[in-house]
Length: 486
View 1: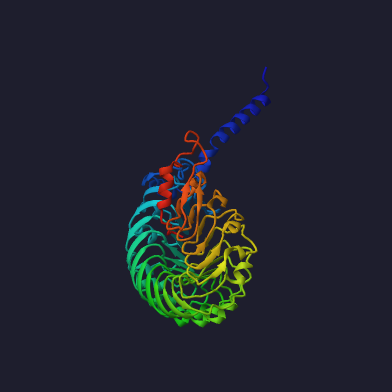
View 2: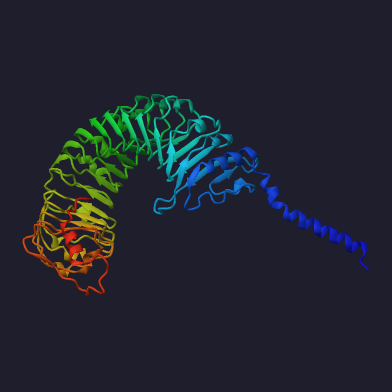
């Protein structure tokens, strides 16, 4: 006979089992109904999600546990939406539109939709202007298009705004000057036209200003005296003209990245740039800058990346006191360096060296860099270099490209190792000779044209065992490639 006490215990255990089975429902109830509805409607506007970014978004489950969704710990309201694709994985993207339903997320503080690649439509005005708590907007690297709203300056609560890597066009709205709380403004990688608004000088809290890779014209405005907190200034790849403005000198205490390359800037390089003691990267390439490089550049002891290529700069080049350069490009100016500078040769961390057309007269066998292990790119084209590169190239481990066209280099191709990483090799207009083997099959570009001696192809494997793409005709196609990309 079952005792009453045992029955009571059994009923209690059954109640516990029932409650535990209902626990997911109880947890799900913690997700606000408006938040859940807004997110699920957004998901319904997504037409392709091959990598399953939104796979965990299922009705009836706790939306605070969904991928990319962050909630306030106390109120269980959605405060952040962070969906980030991975550019190195082709299937990591979303296709579709940004549904206005996201405006239901009334507690949303930050929206981070980055590298999703295939999100289309206009600027999501219905969403961004309907969220009173929104402070951080990063909608980057997708396919949004059209113009930014003229009244974007009404979003005065924003602390960061980035729509980099989309297809927005038209002028940058002048009202953007009203976003005085911004610490980051990134409009790079779009199709913006017109001039840089002078009103940006009112954004005194900016640490990052990115307007690169657009179609902006006119001079760089002299507006930087009030932007002394800037760490990163990117204006490259536009159609900007005139001189480098004097007010940029005000950025010396804090600026780390200064990128003005690929414009139409003229005049001398300002001496004040030598006072940027914290500068890591300086890109002034592909402009029309003239005169000498200031001696004050010797003070740039912390610089790692320096690109002055494709200008009209003349000798003498100053002696740098940098502790270790990582990337240097002085190509195609009017320099007569004579030799590769000692401060370059002594760098143990350099990975990219480009000194094409720099008036170098030396025997390559005599160049003894302190470290070759990290070299990815070497470009010594159009100099007066003799000797053989074999000793140098056979000591590299990760070399991707070597360009040395237009010199007097003489060596036997059969003595050259081809590391698996090597993709581009240009030895044209030299004294190269010997036989090429199947080892070149990993290259994307090979140029041995206009060599004084014949270079022949001799396969080292039989046709039955040779890898695909290493036939004589395939190798011939390699030989015809003119290696221009660097």
